[in-house]
Length: 630
Image 1 (cartoon, helix red, strand yellow):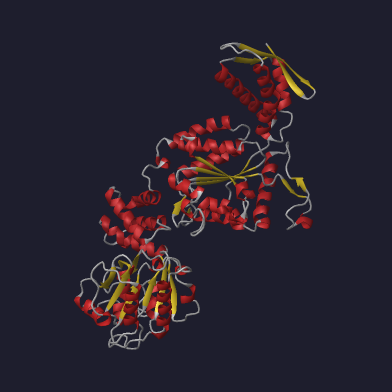
Image 2: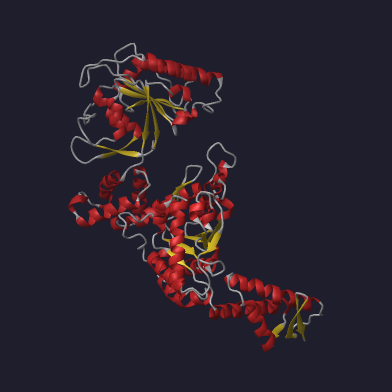
């Protein structure tokens, strides 16, 4: 059996930190609980040549053998006992010297049999160094708090074994006594009984993290060989492509990078286009609306169509389209070192109610995706309670509804190409805002089931009425959650003053009230302030909504509805007299002053298809509007 392996501990850098930690403490700990990124591949150095990518079992063996270990015995609840390295007669003989005759393949030992095997390895009768790995140890007990008697006895024995284990001396590179370690591989440390590890200095808990950027860069250079690049460091173009691959793979494991490379080779993707393969791997979809050639033309056409839909907001529309153009070109967050995983676009709509914030969100959806069904809205007033965030990402394991997942995460997993509107964000509980911080920074979110959802192809729009009023006496009401308030902006103010006042109030809210300045920083200059509806815009909105009423009457009853000039002008003046509520207020006034009396008048008539109905007068009697209809 070959023992050619790079030495460990502090003698040779390059091994994963958790392996160096395990190797350095074999003389003082008899058991280890390994959790976290267990099913990844890991970078391991070689004596000559580049690093290697090894699964955890092979990595453990490759590291332990340099310390004089003869084998690793692995218990798996499905496959039973196995000896590593597989097929090595000397390793099998060493295992047999410790635990006796090995069970047949696929024969899973009982907990009683497993107890005997563990004792034979941790308290060896002969000086044989071996490790015992309990794979999928989270599944040994039904739950760590409600165990069957046999399960409880097993863990009690393991707790005692951790204190009675015997270190072993063998000649070689490390002749001093080392324990034959028992390695528990668990999904979470809490999957084992708390009394097993709590206060037990003989058991060491080690969390295996996900790979950092340096690991991903080194892995990308190793995987470049699949594209015929033997030394990516010597080729500037290949090196840049590998760095882009590593950055785009933020949040992925090294094993996922291997799978992305396989996917790229299957689809005949070149090394420089690996980020596109990463997107396909993350999102699970091949068609990318952002890469469609006609999208730029649609946005250019939108410069004419969106102002016709969102009336009286030229500044807001222009800034929104600028941010949208940036998203189409893939330049959102381009100033950051790593921006590939962030959302395509982030917008924060602020300003008076009824001025077109939601309508502009729908217009953006139709513009980019050609379908308003890609628009997803969450009313954040429904998420004011601390625990309501479970609706977005799903309940934690063990809680009711855990299997259902979250409304937000499920929707984005189903279709990652969406416009997501979070309406009235200031009404959400502050703890829920932490979820948005993760989305805005990393472009991903992990749901209650442990699945990662990516937002890199979504546009996020937040709306708020912040800044419309401010506390009358901040010094007196600070921390009180209430108190008198005064208007901060009002109709007739020049737009630059409205914009400055609202932005200042938004900044104060996130910084002083919520104590979330980091979230405000993620929005940056993407805060789009809407203006009050002016007189000209009000007339256009009135005309648009009045035309909608006439069209609905024609569609529903095949009637031709007309209103003579004098009552129409009176109706216009009445509906546009107060613009504090914006376009929505005009609609409510039209409904009250025209739709209701019209319905009353038509209800009393025998309607004949293609009949002409003319409103000749409008009068108010006792607070009720009546129409004179011919």
